[in-house]
Amino acid sequence: MNEPKATSGVPEAVRAGVPTVWRNPLVRPADDTLSELPQRFYDLAAAGRLWRWFAPLLSRLFPELKASGGFIDSALVEPKDSFARTVLGAEGRVLVKADHDLPVTGSIKARGGVFEVLWYADRVARSFGLPPEGRAALANRVWKERFSQHTIVVGSTGNLGYSVGVMARALGFAAEVHMSSDAKAWKKDRLRHIGVNVIEHAADYTAAVAAARSSAATRPQCHFVDDESSEHLFYGYAKAASHLSRQLEAAGIAVDADRPLQVYLPCGVGGAPAGITFGLKHIFADAVHCVLVEPVESPCMLVQLASGSEESVSVYDIGRTNRTIQDGLAVASASLFAAGVVRNLIDGVVTVSDATSLEWVRRAWFEAGLKLEPSAASALAAPAVWTRSGGDPQHCTHVVWTTGGGLLPDDVFRQLLNDSPADATRS
Ligand SMILES: Cc1ncc(COP(=O)(O)O)c(C=O)c1O
Image 1 (tube, protein in one colour):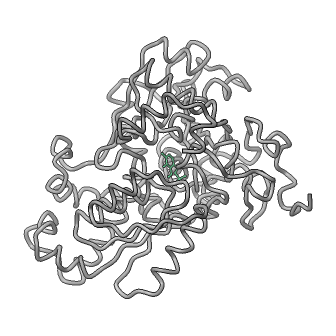
Image 2: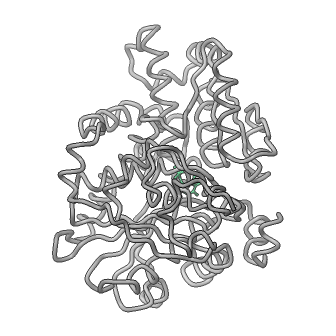
């Protein structure tokens, strides 16, 4: 095969589609790296302020947020010891950061997607003058009418489109969601039901994002949510780090050099895991180790980093198909923006087959009562293989970030529990 030279650093096993543990040779001390990145902690603090300003509005729009006062966060769950042992393949402490149950949209994409729609609503509202009674008034009819003159456009494998669509429509914006061929029917149906213009593409995620970008470029009063390079999405995800830090403190779990945190994050285009890694490194520096998890057929971040290239490299360049039941992670080319953030911050990448991912969907449900989609379940496959490839599993607290699945319709979930991997790929 006539392969572009840029991929020569990618290990043979990754090229062959074999589950692999890749340790990042470029990982460096957090403080050095963070001081060199263009992203800044004060932008993260500003993101926190925006979330706080909008909490009363979110609480008004979504009754399920009343209990949290309008804050979107998930529980930090400690599964029983027997499940922790299965996940780690050894004795040790395993916690689940349960973003699969995140309120409003049931996936990690609520953090970035909701945040970016709020940021845009704030910008539009400021152009009129903010309501003196506070941002909760932005749910009033007069504001919905104003927002309805604007369109929010996004391209997605499913969950980002779902999160952006739900938040945009709740405020009255028009919404146009370009879905890749991977997106599941139930997400598209639910979006259409709330008035989102869903455009289906027979092509992959990169093509859906490109179509969304071109569509947005032709319209006035339009905002394109750019999953490949948006800083708003990024800071929305990054805020999760301070939530986790507070939860660990409340649970009495110390994080330091003697008891580091090992975090496993599913990775698609890379925005969500990059944002969370950035946030965690700011808080815990070298006492946190982040490992990304990707499907064997879509290891786009691994390929990007291992290639050492500054140009975009694709999983197609190494002969992989980008066909996977881990639909949220079905991305052929990583975000260069996200790759630039994680290049010197992550410890490595674990790749997971569809069969293993499905096996973890079943185990998570039957052994721990966690309702996960395959993209999220793949994170549970990582701790045992990562620690087996080096290190002492008992030395760390392991946090598995389960990124989606809570809103899966019962029949779709039942089908996942019964599917063989081959069936699931077709559905
Ligand atoms: C369930 C789930 N987990 C993880 C991710 C990865 O996020 P990102 O594409 O920002 O890397 C996605 C992306 O859509 C997702 O849907």
